[in-house]
Image (cartoon, rainbow, N blue to C red):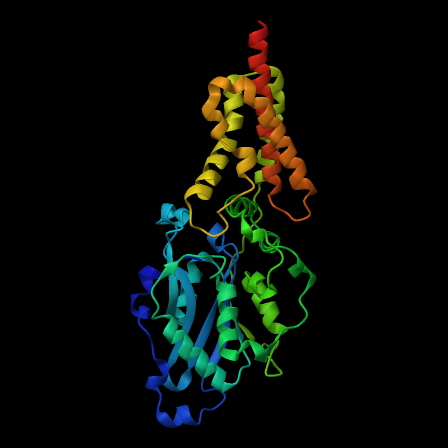
Length: 380
């Protein structure tokens, strides 16, 4: 999700919406006194927007109030190092709806609105709770536990009461890990590869409550369409309209990461015969950059799902510190890479992108080539 901080200074203060409505309206509200909707922005081209975005829209026509409440972060593109270190901040903002929708227009993204069928007392309670939330201090950016879709679902559960919500039977896909659900929804292969590279930790847990797997805005809408509050459907088919029509959608990449990885793999196989030093390092450098990046996340980042990564094993750059003794460690390291590939392929739930498997094979081949080159020199 992209930050709107620079546009939203007036929206940082609590609204206290109901203080602006006459007392009679509050004591004897009509059903349309407050309207609650879920707004869903379509996915964007960038990795941070590849899942789309979900937020709550609250309207009070009698007070001429119309805001969306959304978890927003600081601009990650301006604070890249802070993002990867886990130091980025986020908070709930109340954003005028026109401003919020207009934010997506230049990107060609669409915004869909789904009006919820809730009792007026719940809608009032929800608005009061959201006004309190925008007064909270910023918190660390957490795409896993404070993701947009999951946050909206939790806000609704708190206002309605968990005991008053009845969910439909969960589809089969919720028997998978959160990683698999998220990866399968991303269209652009480079975004998927990038996400899989730095989110390879506890996000792969399966035995968690299904409501915690609702990370995608589209999944949120599906869940709400099958849910009931106080015995009545929360979302019906007729309560849907478009606030902004999408002009473009994410496209499949013409050159995908797996294509590039197979080219590198072919060159690595060729170099088993050529033993060209420059070609060797041209193959190794991309893999070592991945390994260095992942290792830094594991050691120094406070981002969720970076406390451990399966990618540390095949792409670990630490053995190359002992380059002088490469004759002794390259072959064992190659065997470790092969064992890792076999283990990942046998594991029943996806832990790595297919590109990572191919690049791990490149690491194995490069280490074998280094060993062979060193061994031949000793023979001579």
